[in-house]
Structures are given as C-alpha cells and as structure tokens.
Length: 97
Image (tube, rainbow, N blue to C red; front, side):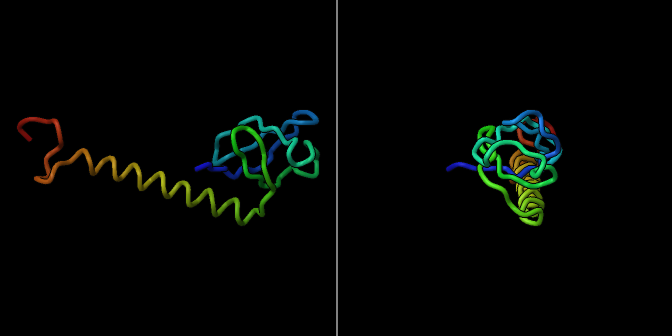
C-alpha cells in the first residue's frame, strides 16, 4: 500500500520544485506531475508521494487528512505505552514494581 501526505505549498524554489509544509515538516517537492512549479500553486494543498506532488487537493481535505494522520500517530503512541505495561499493571521489564 502506498500513502501520500498532504502539504501546503509555501515557496516556489525553481521551475520544478517547491517547498511544501506537511504538518510542520518542510520538504522540497517536485511538482513536474502537476505541470511544474508556478506561483499559482502558492498556498495550495497537494498530495506528496516519494518527493513528488501527485495531485492538488482542497484546503479542507488537506487539513482534515493531516488531522487524521496526527490522530493515528497519537493512538499508535498510546498503544505503545499500553504494551509496556503487563496485565498486572506493572511496567514490563521492571523488577519489583
């Protein structure tokens, strides 16, 4: 399965590349699949897969997808914390507690 991450185009770097903010992480992204980098894409949301913007999406869809990805990451962190505790409520791997 492949996943594309939504991001907001924050700067045009050259005719092919833009800086894209994906939930606070900025990366240089190739925009060739969208016809190249242009000022018309500034502030727009795109889906990024392996360094390439593969489609433009609405701001609403971009923000909602980022919110859901953060929620999934939080749930994964909670599950990891739960796995550290055994059935008796003791921390796994800690003697005497």
